[in-house]
Length: 214
Image 1: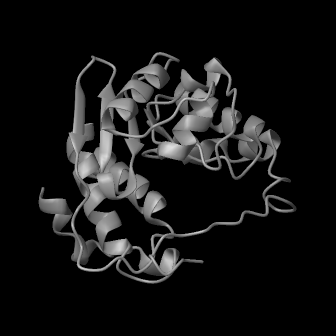
Image 2: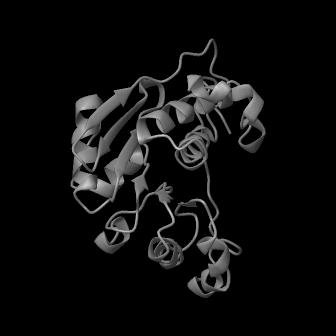
């Protein structure tokens, strides 16, 4: 649900179907993961299940994107080493970093991204900052910041982060872009999404995208 400002409030019930998804269930669909173009994981299922999925994808050189939502502290470093692209928002990054780490500006976000990269992320950390855009830190040490797309009116931000992640995935595996170009597609997709109500109902179609100017 959204507030009058367009910001969202999200409640997750991780019982029943979500909590019952076990590593053995991932093993049962291992051939599907092996043939995938990319694997995207979140934390709405048990951590051990996420780790198993990432392990399978990593062992077959399938690109992995990890959006640690809802975030939990003290993720094992073995998990980070199986993640190609880590994409938290600022509050999720703060939880991952712990020790009262706060992201109050872009400089702090870059610092946080470097710290997360040093935990073993393979290619890049992207921290999303809402209306402030994103920061990217790459394995080779390059750092970039990109502003969010301007929109006339924010209607509902529910699902914007998921939309950004999906846009990044499309840019990386369908368009063959580097992470910077993929982030532009993610930002363009998210900008379209926040101008509509709902989560899945606000996701843009391909014909609406113009590929984020790419």
